[in-house]
Amino acid sequence: GSFLTNAALLAISTVVAVGLVLGIGELWFRVRAGAAPGATSWLGFHPERGWAPAPGEYVNLDHSDLRRTRISINAEGLRNPPLAMAIPKGRRRVSILGDSFVFGAALDEQQTIPGQLRTLLGDSCEAVNLGVEGYGTGSEYLLLEELAARGYQPGEAIVLVFFTNDILDNLGLEYGTGTPVPHFPRFWVDSTGALRHTRPENRQVDWARTLEKRWMFVRYLRSRASNLVLANAWMLDVAGALGLRPDLPRTPAVVEGFYSTGWEERWRETE
Image 1 (cartoon, helix red, strand yellow):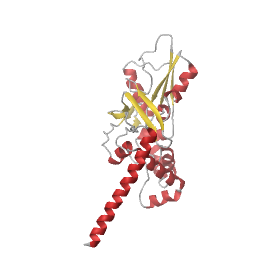
Image 2 (spheres, rainbow, N blue to C red):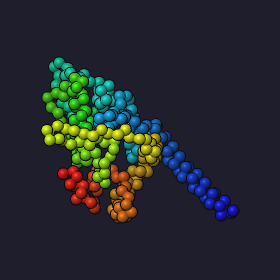
Image 3 (cartoon, rainbow, N blue to C red):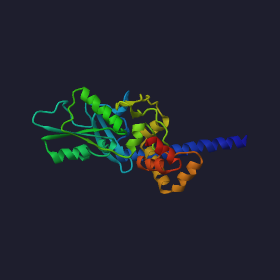
Image 4 (cartoon, rainbow, N blue to C red):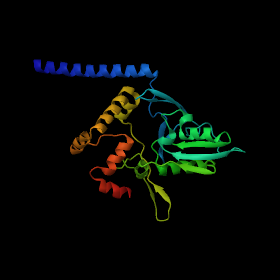
């Protein structure tokens, strides 16, 4: 009886201690940040592209340095000032396609690639931000195609921003493992040269991701854990030996996926 009682007390005290640490850590972050914004609250399901920004006003918080940025999504689902579909008379337009590098959630709008181009080009030329986080070239093409069907005129130039992970995004594969991701559309070109893609699944709510989205301290701990693993390569080796694949940030995950054990198969898949 005493053993069970002690075990129960130990379990309860452990839960209470962990709860206190999480609570105090979260309180500290919220006081410092002044708010508790969602990390990706502007993204919703899209039946063709997998996800798309929803019009509205949002706040993004970089939990590493507590940097706050305002995210304004216009009526067309773009992080861009209000936009006419047709190019206004007497003006020029440049459309910039890309993923999170173009979207620039960690930056104020004028600091993004399109924002800085607007400053350089002046009022006579529009630099339109068509970037969406997580998109590969295929999804970016679908976005532009959808906008064009609604009358959007891309202008005299379309700038495509490409990064290594777009190869995997176009195939709907996880960066580190090369396994299919159901909520990513998978693209290929058929024998006639037409672009085809699978239908993305509507992603189910993931409890861990929901917790990470709502709790800034949890996001901070996850970031620190990723940095710890990246700084100690042996941890990746141990995890791999145990059949585990740590969820690494984008660039390290791409490198790990292309060059770790089993790379030959993943290279053939992405060839």
